[in-house]
Length: 187
Image (cartoon, rainbow, N blue to C red; front, side, top):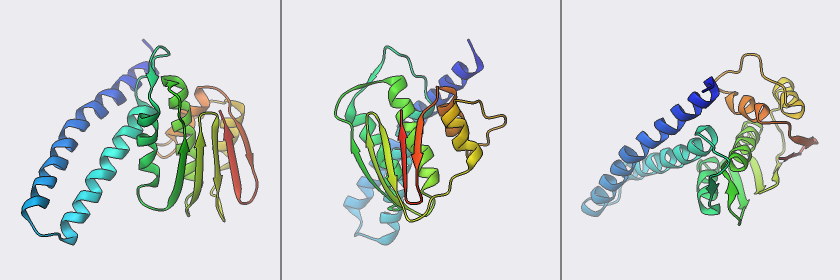
């Protein structure tokens, strides 16, 4: 078994182990909300739990094990993308209506995470099974990261902030087209 296979299994295990406690916190919070009057503090905790649950779903798809025999339902893909729009910085439209193989869904999620990095100041993101398109007044594009995606190159020393670029590049090249206010990634 390769190091990348082990890393994917670790990612799957971490996400699996976090789902249950986050669900319990969410359930406990619902009980508190039934017994307490509405408050900004409870709303803040509720928003944080929902964001954490959405990120775990996203990370499970992006960093978990991805067997070619597995399929991912469109609802699961859409729920994974909810994490990208949760803070309101990115307006997201997801138009994936057919099941995808797990590796294809993984590439799509990783591409969206790369677009999220480029949308540092906010913008809009449209996702289909074939790829995505982003619109913004300004993008943050690190040339080395985006060049690696186009060429399918291995990133020499990815950081935790760029691991999604390294994984997408390692899975094969993608087509990238961008202008000052538009970015398109085709898987």
